[in-house]
Image 1 (cartoon, helix red, strand yellow):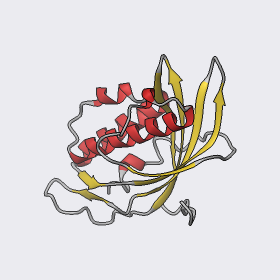
Image 2 (cartoon, rainbow, N blue to C red):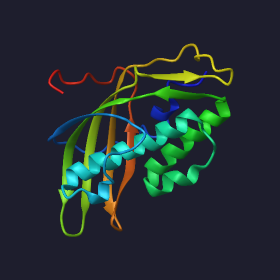
Image 3 (cartoon, rainbow, N blue to C red):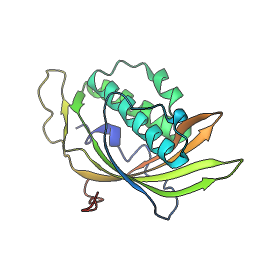
Image 4 (cartoon, one colour):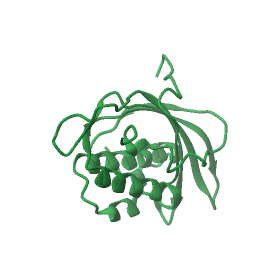
Amino acid sequence: MFATLVLLAAAACSESSPDDAASSADETPSTATAPLPPETINDPEAAAIAAYTRYWDTLMSAFADPDGDLSEYEAIAEGQALEHAQATEEGWIAEGVHGGGAIVHHVEVKESLLTDEVQQVVLVDCADTTGTQVFGADGEPVEGEVYGYREIQSRVELLDGFWIVTVMAVQEIGSCTPDDDS
């Protein structure tokens, strides 16, 4: 059976885990369009969160109707995060599933390295997938799917003038609980 929302599959990214620290928080429901392109935001940490949101918005848009066009991910991700996005959509197609709904993100900046040479932000998200649903080719909900909160750590970098997600480490359902004040 198809693992819970392959878009959050730990298999594609369980070995990568960005480093420690803690900072600002943001609760963002994933939507079809990001309010501002990350590159237009002056604050690097806010730009990194916007790029992370763009990553998930793109993935969730593909989840509604996976078409196998994996090139759209090349503009928003590189390295392991690109492999994660592409493998996720390939998995949906192979399993004949699609889905919908919205993931609610509870994103915090875990650490940042912001110098003249490097613009890199590590984010941690306690993502809530209870607002999503996986459907089979027949349009019926796929039985056995599990939804809930799971921790996602990512690294977002400014590369050639674009904020790009480069690492995506997704944990299992139940791996986090959002802060009461987020």
